[in-house]
Length: 307
Image (cartoon, rainbow, N blue to C red; front, top):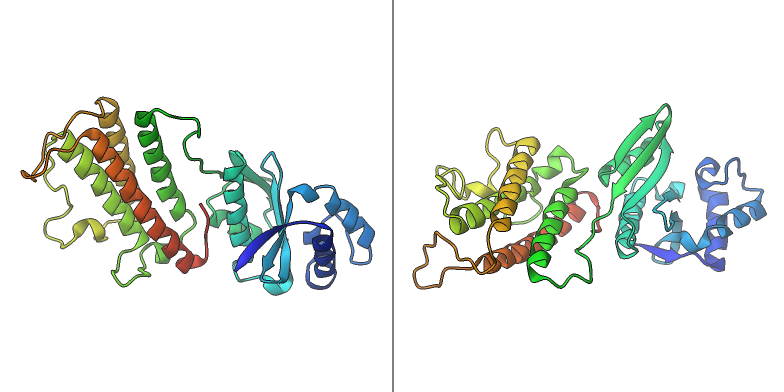
């Protein structure tokens, strides 16, 4: 398993040995460095050691990645470790560390010719700005609601938005094949999960709570389990647009009501009509379950892990 270990003196020596024997000097830094200039390497990395990590796999050192207090990152990986998703996993782990350090954006610099770096950055959903041969990458860091927030009404809606954002972000960089391929016996796919959660939003807020006249609250009646099925015409763009629309309508419905208000439409006569508070917390647990499942499926698909 790929891990990150804070860089210490012993780790610095391991990195030096790795850089001299199993890395491209141009990747390693400082600019113009050569394997016969060991002390220059040590001085350079000591300068930001408090922000640096060894990339490890068991007892083996595979490379280095850094994360400064301002969100700057950069990495290099040994030649023998390339092509296995090492850099991608390390970057995802750094983004997770940024979450705990209150860093809003992780950013990196590379070039248009560094196809490996660009591939990794795209797969974590980085926004890329190209200026000549230089590429600036920005990765937005997900954040839960503020830890000093005590208002239950704000907490539940902000956690829902956190999960809604996480759902779409977990799809960033997935190939069309992986979006439409199931990794589990039940057969659901990542894109179909988005469709399902769009109908969850529609069904609970528009149809159940607000009492809107919705013709098919569970999707196409001619298709079994329709909200879990990608039909002809269902593309990434159409499914995510439908999902965003339902989320926006849910927000407006919730904002115009009180947590104690009860649902207008309810078919379970033996069970009391749910309050808006109950419905919103039900959605929180639904998202939490499905995002945990999506975490596993994404890792099985292309190795991407993290928040």
